[in-house]
Image (tube, rainbow, N blue to C red; front, side):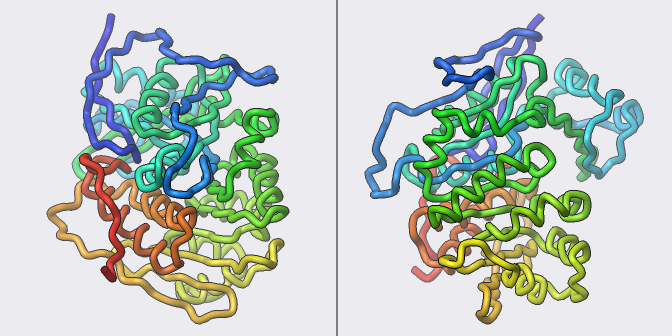
Length: 399
């Protein structure tokens, strides 16, 4: 039996839908020789070796949890079958696991390569020259990993996946009813990433070669030691460490590992809901986003050679930016007609991508924010965090 699903590349250089033939339990992994380790590594590497713009090859290294989103239109009966709410996001329990094959086999599902920092990595590569970005995370040895591999290949993104033969690739079942989305995530192999993979010779060489690191807060639920290793490497060598707050529950339930990384944040990015959750869990009484941004920027810092910058997005409201010891600034978002908005799911990942790509290119803080807003505006006109083709080129708003 075979079935065809529409595949959508999140945060890739193309916005497309291509039929993908998948046979259950069939593996389509493209392998290279793994470095000395008990774990296999699945990777994609472009043949080019030099960036022509002066940006160092693989200057940006990103770490978090790669997922495959399986989206389908459903109804209340489907939600009831798995005990889901119409507009919710949960981690899968044993009773939820059959939903992924159910969506694939019985619904017109769309397969979307996702995961917050992987989206950001693809978005940054959309802007930067070829061979600028590498992403780390964990996947299984299955058809879902093959789909992710094809997605990153199309996006021009290099990945160094830790391949786990005992765990499935992380999946997120998305049941769409009217304007609601119910998301049920099984992290699978993404939940088994480890420090050994990061410290393997081939991967650590990339860590040492990068000038900027981007880490998604979701990885605090997986492997805090890997985050800490990157953070310490950044501080030791005066490299930029960018951290995303990712979700309110990170501040609420993973406060200890979050606080352990905080001294290493050169840039911390979040939306207003995430910022409010951080403030509440850290004894900041004010609910004023500017005051919360100032509190984030003023946290103790390990690398004194760099000032801390806190960036808080607020949807259609201005982006708030606080630099330690300076006045808080606000940057109005790029206007867009409501009728052009297709999907806001990946707006935050896209903003982080544009912002971080600006840092890698050596742009001013103001231009980094502007580029983040520009990329977010492109993203919300597509399905999920993906971008238009032909590829568009950023031009500063002031020009």
